[in-house]
Image 1 (tube, rainbow, N blue to C red):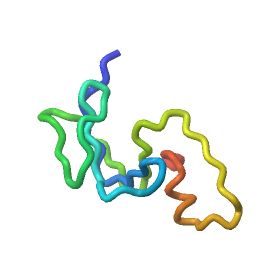
Image 2: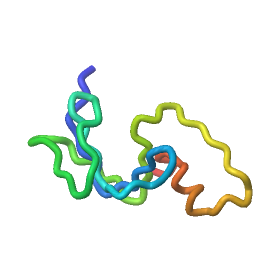
Image 3: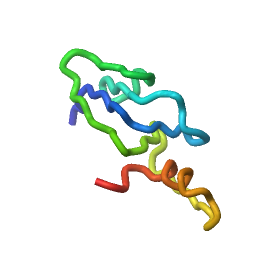
Image 4: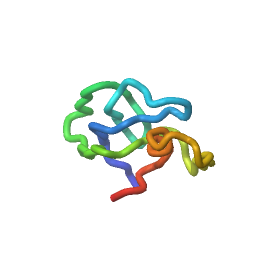
Length: 84
């Protein structure tokens, strides 16, 4: 199955260690092609609204444990698209 070219916009991006200074991820042929701010993606790309969500690009089946005293903001960053 072909994965359409896409750009995920206005999303919080967590790289496994920290939230990075970017808000867009461009996917081309099913792979991450670019990460940055305000990216448009290739012509005809599907635009996905990531507002209020956190993306963990490249982390598949990620699993994390956070202690009860872990700050709430960091706990939110560790979630992967839990809310719809």
